[in-house]
Structure formats: structure tokens, C-alpha cells
Image 1 (cartoon, rainbow, N blue to C red):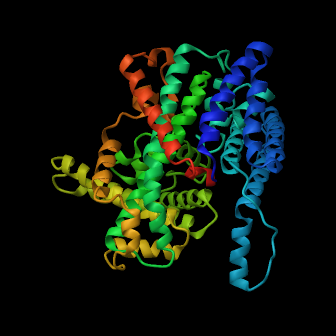
Image 2: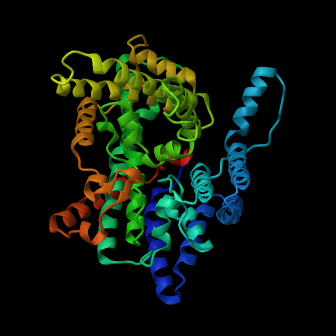
Image 3: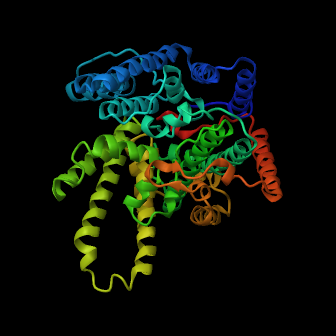
Length: 489
């Protein structure tokens, strides 16, 4: 999904918040204005799909109400099935048809299906609502509160994925969408920090990674090219998605809505399980609560646990996109988790001197985890499996010679210094969970905004400088569109 940074960052989002504040003061009924603004934001992309999200909200709310009254498992199954069928049609029908045509030679001839914006996110949110309604875990809510919960524009496009049982009180509480000096100041700081991650780090990394991955579509990369492509994309995706999550949380904070934290410095992870506790935390939580545990979790012995983990990761990969590259990415992480679990439970406890070597082992484990994550990001980014193989071959030192693309795409003379600096930044920079003091389970905030926000002149000056730098970056690249990577998923 490509969009104009100028329009969405500097025009619509702040203007929408200001408009909502004014509308609330003039007319009241603020939740209605939130829903209208959110649906306008969604419909601006492609109005033809606006009835899809509206219909989804209406159907799921009605089903959820009925399930809450009767604790009806058949109704819950019907509701989940409807959501999965809609997601399957729009996101996976073409992929399935292409594979059936390849396997059988038959021509299915599906019409062109355009993936609706954010369907993966709002579908998962509403599936969790229906399941929680059956379990009796939902919070009291009205229709307009539910509509705001599903459509709230800062998080609608790329998360975090909300669970009704954990976040409805934010939309239904008496202070929802009130503007305070503390909330506005703290939220603005978080928004600016996220925007800086996106514009000052992620986008420049993208200008390095994209030409190299494009080159890999037809040609194997050299050792230097391949590792540059893999590392540049690893940092691009990290700061892009982390930046979006911070921007969403900051915008929500401006109107006294506390969204769950979605990132906890995942590149500090010391093993692959730790990585998944830190990366896209709301997706990991959804997969755990609504897939892994219902499959049996770790309650039926080691073999069943391994199978459940692998299934969850493959389906998690498929959730990101309808393609074999995403399935392979999920399978890689599934394999990583199985190896980690086997080593942690069967081998590591029996290693001599394990406690004495703990600091050394931590460093080795972190480095190995990061290498495995970077290797997997290659197939996540590659447009085709052949392109991924061309990059992997180069990373193994068996690719081609460095060509003209290397000089065009690299940060001349400074690329490895930049990668080293970004690695240090990922390891030492205080993250939002550290600043906010959230509760680990679900990333729920522990402290009030008033307790968190402490105005400081140095912070204000830093925010002004960072904001000016972001604006200068936009002006310098006004002819180039910017893309949030997770909008495609």
C-alpha cells in the first residue's frame, strides 16, 4: 500500500484529531464523530470497500450480542467461519486458484480481487470478540463503542490488534476521547518518535534494500550485496513497523485512549521464543490465545506441543500474505522454535558448567538469534522464492560478483558503520514499554498518563528538532511516496 506521507501524516491525522475535539465540544456524542472520521479514513483509500467494514461491524456486533446472551457455541462457530470465509475470499482466493491451476492445468478464471485495506487486522479483532463473548470475557459495551473499537483509525490499518476484553474499557470509559495537556504532550512525543523511526531510518534503509532485492529477481547477489540487502531490510522493517505502532499509540494517547504496546525491543531477544514475545506482541498474543491454546498448547506432551507450535507459526506466516514465501517464512520460524524448545528442555540442562558460562551463552544466543531472524527476513521480503534463493546463495558466499547495483544502492563507504550504529541503537535505546511501565500480559499500561508525562525543556527541544528533521526529509523527497510495509498485510 503506497500513500502520500504529506497527506496522511501532516494533513489528515492531526486535522482529524483537531476536528474531533472541536466537534465534541460543539455537538457532543464524540464516539459518533470518531467512527465517522475512522470510516472516512478507511473509505478514502477505496470507497467501494467501505460497505465491507461497515457490514463486518454490524454482523459481528449482532452475533456477539446473541452469543453473550446464550453462550451459544454454534453461533460462535458460525461467526468465526463467516469472518474466515471473508478473509479467505479477499486474501487467499487468487493464491489458491493459481496453485490449483498449476497442479491440475484447469483454468478457474476468478475475477480480479483487490485486497481490502486492513482486512487481516479487523477480522482478527472481531474473531477474538466472538470467542471472548462465548467465553463470557467481554466487557459491557454499546454498538457505537464497539464500532469505535473496531474502526479507530490510528490502529485500524496495521494494528496493534485489539482484544475487546482488554481494551474495550478504553473506548467505553468516562475519560475516553477527552483531551488533556498530559495526554496531548505525551502522545505527541510518542508520535514524533515513531515518525522519526519511519522517515529518518526505515525509509533510507528501504532505498538500500529495494534495488538489491529487485536485482535478485534475475541475478544472484555477491556476498557483500546479499548481506547488505538482508540487513538493510531487517532494519527497514523493524523501524517501519515499530514507528507505525508508536505513531498509532501516540495519536490515541492524544485523545486519552491507551492502545496496547506492540513492540518491546525484539532485536534484544536472546532466543527465538524471546523474539516472539517482543515482536508484534498483539499478534503473538492472538495466536497464543485463539489458536495455540485451543489446539492443546503444551498440555498433551512434547510431540503434540511441537506440532502445535509449527502449525501456529505456519498459519502466522500465511496471515501475513498469500504466497509461498510467507508460508516458508512461517515454517522457518516454526522450525526455529522447535529447535529452541528441544535444546532448552533436553540439552541445555545437561551441559556442564552452564551456569558459569551464562554471560557468554547469552551473547552467543543473541547473535545466533539475530542471524536466524535476518535469514528468515529474506524470504519474507523477496517477491519470489527464486529471489530469496539468490540472496541466500550470496549470503553463503556462493553468489555472483558485485556489480553496478552495489555502487548505486549502498551507503557509499558508510553502510557497515550505519548497520553497527543501528544495532547499538536497537540494544540501548529506551523503548516505549520501558518508558510506560506496562504489564507484560497483553502490553496493558500500568500507570496513568499524568504520572508518565513530565514536561522538560530538553525533551521539548529534542522533539522540535526531530520533527523539523522529519519535515525536511519529506520536503527533500517530495516526489517519492513512502510506504508503511505492514499496510500490505
